[in-house]
Length: 153
Ligand SMILES: CC(C)(COP(=O)(O)OP(=O)(O)OC[C@H]1O[C@@H](n2cnc3c(N)ncnc32)[C@H](O)[C@@H]1OP(=O)(O)O)[C@@H](O)C(=O)NCCC(=O)NCCS
Image (cartoon, rainbow, N blue to C red; front, top):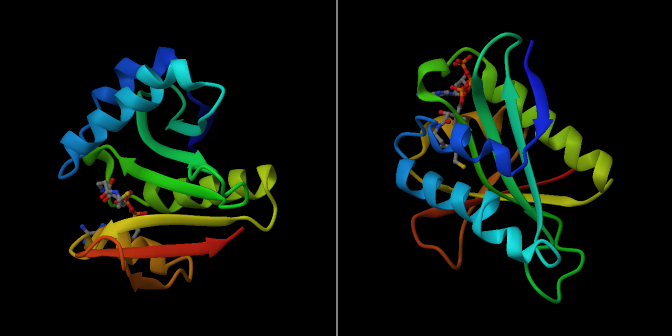
């Protein structure tokens, strides 16, 4: 039974220590941006960071997302920057639970909003996970080698 919570800057250390291979460098950079450096931007960047743990266990998964990221696009919805399950805990159904909980959380905050995420075309686990939710992948016009995944919550 995964327990979700909204992250705050206290979670910085725990999230940085995630084994997010093969996206480790990107993950650490983004955690830093979201939970530390962007404290200064609190007014302008609407962040949604969910952390998940099993009862009496360490944090094992997280979702990093922004809302209305693009200035001027007040209705652009949520952009999921990363969804990660610590490598030690993968292939146990956690990713499925986490994506379902994230979509549910976004739906509560903004019914009918778009949720979008980018995935490298070789990221078979993420593409397969997304397909479980009926999310179709389309080639990104802006980012070669990446697919855009998008759904309405
Ligand atoms: C993508 C990710 C979150 C999946 O987490 P997970 O806990 O392993 O996912 P689940 O156990 O719920 O697996 C769901 C389905 O995804 C697919 N899948 C997961 N891992 C896979 C793998 N290594 N190869 C192929 N398919 C895979 C399978 O269809 C799986 O269902 P099954 O186990 O019944 O066959 C995890 O691999 C991860 O954190 N990767 C690194 C970060 C990343 O790439 N994030 C996505 C980009 S933002």
